[in-house]
Length: 219
Ligand code: ADP
Ligand code: MG
Image (cartoon, rainbow, N blue to C red; front, top):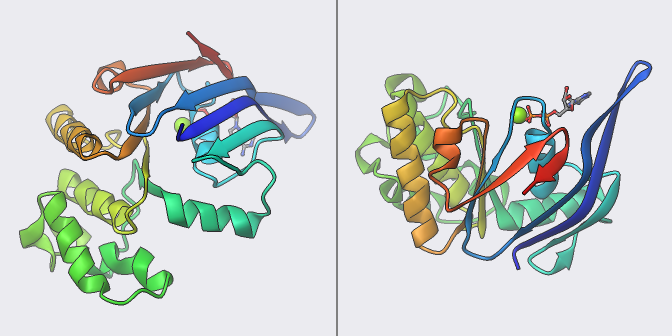
């Protein structure tokens, strides 16, 4: 199993009030699945994504990622696991405007001190159908093309899991569907894909949906 999370709880305290963002969540995802995590705004989707993506830890519960217990790791060790296993895609693309597409895609490898980053970046851009746009800067690309660059950047470290938070939120319907088709083809190639979305039409393009509501999974 790729992801095995049990009884996750996360409470935010703001002033005098407590918000139970996750209230005992179980999530199991097999290697090679394509799953949507869906539910209304405020239901706890992003909180869950941050924990599954090793960006944050739950207050309690257990989390095994590819067989490794990551629930009790220090922040540094958690960052290692994250960099090794997970590629992130966000609603707002998060590209650096000063850099062209190739340079944006290379970044995770440069941070990790790998050689041959440029060739790998060009190959990743080809995988997402953007081989002719490598020297364009983000402001010279459409929204859909920017998201493809972000997906290439997520792929460059060859992560087992792609984790996308509202990846179609800034795109029109047709472009959003094209991005979901790209995720489906990456999934066909064996990658585990998790898409967080409040849009049911997008969630339905995944082979399985996990619905969360008020910090709980509804079956
Ligand atoms: P979703 O992604 O489904 O919209 P979130 O996981 O972002 O939901 O939020 C779940 C709940 O936790 C919401 O009530 C939200 O207001 C609250 N919350 C999220 N992040 C924080 C935070 N850093 N501090 C305080 N409350 C938060
Ligand atoms: Mg969210």
